[in-house]
Image (tube, rainbow, N blue to C red):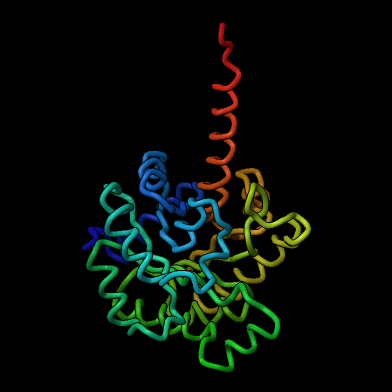
Length: 279
């Protein structure tokens, strides 16, 4: 069981906002990432099934494919990899709310019982569009199930975060009682397995999207916290650009904080060793 309550997490985040410090959430695909994110005083650590794939060298979209039990992976990662090395920071479980093989009420009780302090809707069907999204919605695998999962967690007094992709989803999640809205700008650009810049929206487009989501959120609850994530927001400078032009108060990073720095550091370090002269 986590030492953090929903109210204690919300209070800590509000203290950061009051002190004019950004809220930063860090995705952790391995225990080492979680351990050192905590040392850097991240506010939240988030565990997703995509983190395991990402740190195995695969794109984050693997988390949306039928190649593993998303909820089972997050349970295992939390119990055996991340939670044992995190001492103080709230750890948030990425829950696949559209999973028809699990009772969400029981799953939420289980993730909190092993030490997770909250939940977020990941993997999310909100990132899917077109006819495939329409098909999912019409056959009982829609975003509304993710909203229902967050509502159930809120009813259990569990801290909640929600990835939202448009103002309507923002409204629905805040009405469900979510504590933190995460405005999702799409797959993070850059690196070996990220989206191409041609696929992503621009930073200025991201500013407009984030603000529209924030406006919809606060129209329901003026106290809800709004942060941003993904798309072209790949560096601290990108995050600063968006946050300074919107009412968002922080950033949730996975690829941008965990994968991209590791790719660069490993490549440069190995290259430095290979540059050693041998007599």
